[in-house]
Image (cartoon, rainbow, N blue to C red; front, side, top):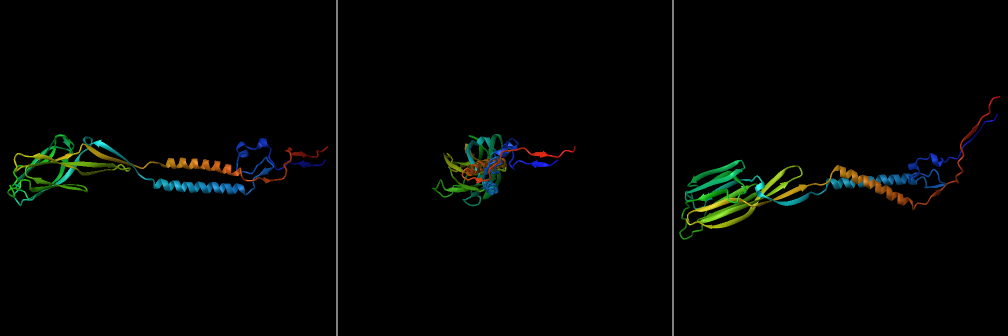
Length: 288
């Protein structure tokens, strides 16, 4: 008996083609007699990959070079720790002519680990005081009292007889001590919180107040105070790696949609007319 074999055309029956394969915009059609030219698929694939790599590179550069965001606030100085200042006092009237000076501070609560202190220098020329604590208070703080200044030049009551230098970090300011003068040196501070969890505190001259004159023209007072409010800057760098990954995923979806729309303007490549689907049939000669 003769042996006969018949095969269907190369096209796959529709019910055997996976759903996503049927809707693949880059694949050659499996069920239609017309399809895109075979070179379209690799061109679109390479285009998609190239654009996605370029977008990824741009987003990575933008992430590395993203600018810091600076947020400014005014905060009550009483919520801050305070300052430690270095002081230098110099007599301008000559050695031994400034007699004495009384340095003291007193706080109802601890300021930088200290509450009160007092010390007197006699007949000074120049002396330094390290780590003078200054905290915010309406009535309390550090002060320098000059109870018995030299008369100096006759007839010149307000001539400067001493000078106080105040330093901390890059801040440097001076206050002249004048007979019968009462002054208050008010300092502000800028507190900066950085993204690496470090904090910088930089004082600055906020104001120099002239509070009046003493009845005793041979005495003077210089007070140190902090301003009521301090400047605070919070520096942050927004964004994360997860943000970059989500952006890349969104870009991939957008590029797929854009290339799909682009294929609508690509003419079809016509193939031979498709024959109706015929199942594969095989016959054999059976032995008698």
